[in-house]
Length: 330
Image (tube, rainbow, N blue to C red; front, top):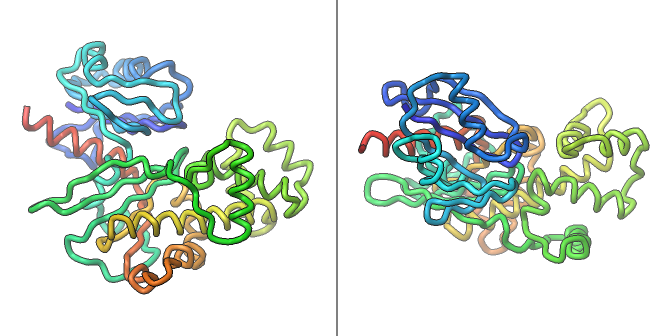
């Protein structure tokens, strides 16, 4: 059997798969809080003790670059070494891949029920595909057609320089440069980026922050869920949170369009990660697509690119598919 894992900065999703059941039907699974464990091996041992299943191989997707079978996670103080982990856990082989590469690996196998369409567009057969996934961080990947299948490629595009598109975003850039010295897209277009946008609007006195909400934010280990929830509250939306989420959606639309242009993603753009699923109503208002197509002379072409929100745990599916295919060859 194969142990597959989607390792994120906030949570890690572990599951056991078999060749007979395939990558969409786990035999056992559990979600763990990543920061509660000193390393991945400790977490896996706990899961193995609970499941007591005969695991021989493992395939993990990680939030960070994988070089030479090793990965330094971007938003977690772990170093994962595939060969060392295999020896420590007494497994025959451990494969590591970037989390967005795993998501991309799953994309060609997603069904209509796995997706929500933001822009129907006019997909080109065998066209390149872009994947943008704001979760704890901002992951980006792409797929290109090679003879008889799509090949997924990882990137660290989420750390490229943030490019503002209006006067308010220019002020946000100045704010971020003062705070961090460098402003990459992940700083303003991810789970760790949403509080930065909120702080910008609060400190710019866009609206008054209520004392009660400020106290809730101060007490929260992660401010992002509270900000998103307050922005989506139809009965009593918080003005600062609404402004924050609106800007986030515009920046996400622009950056998704950037990647689509760079890889000429006529096969479609897929939005993964936990945030797009959570803010789906905001993505459907038109603000996202307005920023997505705002590419000057290429606006007409951009409007023809399909855009989808991935509704499932695609990274885990991709990691499982990657591992099962290699496991079948051993």
